[in-house]
Image (cartoon, rainbow, N blue to C red; front, side):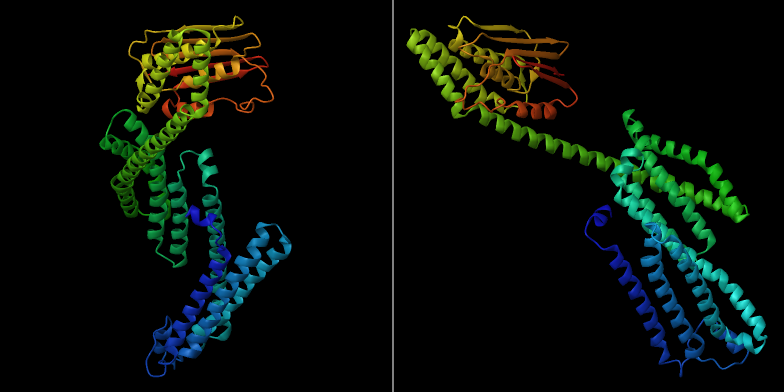
Length: 509
């Protein structure tokens, strides 16, 4: 329903054509009986009175034309009220003029209903004086005209209330968490049904029972979603305990409901009937229905969360793997090995190749798992750091300080979650022309990982192809952290003109 209001539907056109269709259909029903009115007695509300007084009854004169005038008055009055008076008053345009127009519409209805009633009840003129008939008819139709105006007002109130409620579902839910979208929609439906019941002049008992039962059901449903069901499930209790809570609430609210019912009916029997009916509906229908809907929504939300996490992780892992196995990374690694081969014998070159092979094997095999041992992640970090040290260890102005805990007691972590920070430290923190430093710390305590990287920052040269690159995989690793460790991690990133610092805490269990 909310989605319908958000689409480009013209509610005014719908109202106009609905009213026009109802008016045309009502007139056609009257016309269909005109052809047979000469040969067949067409039943009307007052025909039996004409028969009782042995008066000639003309269907056209005493029913068809008065009713056509009334239907036309209903139709024209609705259009005037709904499309002219109410929109102007809502926008506060020419208030006095439109209030006067509303009063004029009331007088018009009074005159129309009074005049047409003198024809519908024409039998009165044959045994009562004209003054008596006019006095009686116009007194009764003042009340009827007021009732019609009240129905028009009721309709406008429901329409604007429904538009506000359905158009502001998100804001209402944000302010009043107990009101779910289902409850808001139900409130609108209840208002519409109550209006229709009043319009067709349903029995007072039926309207009263509906007005008591429907809002109570909405309240029980909302309270169940907001409090009763979550509390019951948190305590690992079942539906029986939940229904007992519903029964307890009904016992508490039944006293004011019974008092209200007694004021309306002024009898004892309807009070007991409404009480029994209301309690039965809430305990046997509303309560179980809310439980089923809540459980289904919870299962659906869990499935959606799982699918989003799986999809997000797959995308993040694929992007991360692509960021690692790319020509840039391999080119830098080969340059490192080439420089080492020129400086020293083949032992260091062999060491570098071996570490590179271990890293590539890790990326191609263990990176595909959801979780790996933290010790394997540390091995990868050590291999990467050792490979980078081969490139910079001949520079005395480069200081690399490591405090990496080796014994982590079987803890597990998402693979390649920490390497982007170290990669960026070496990428942005090392300069062969200026003093540089990198400090890396990795410690665990009570299944919590504490990871810190602190490195220097150097201005990029004009011909550096990575000058405008803010780091490999930082955004990716933030996404992976939010997916893999929601509410279980804290990432702090600080940057100054000469230093870059990250602090990461992860609850691994």
